[in-house]
Image (cartoon, rainbow, N blue to C red):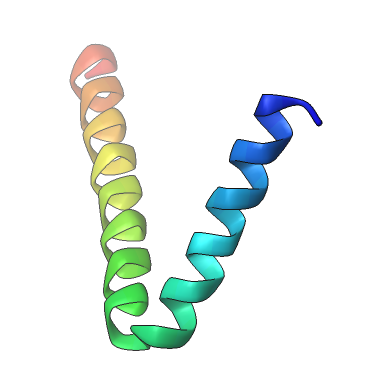
Length: 53
């Protein structure tokens, strides 16, 4: 078995385990990821606004 596949399966198993044992923590982590993506998109929009205005 390829090491990359093994690491991928282990990561997926950990995520599933974390989801079932700590659902509130998992939801908080997902919320944080989406918040970071939103902040990045907002910063990018501000950059382009200041560039063209």
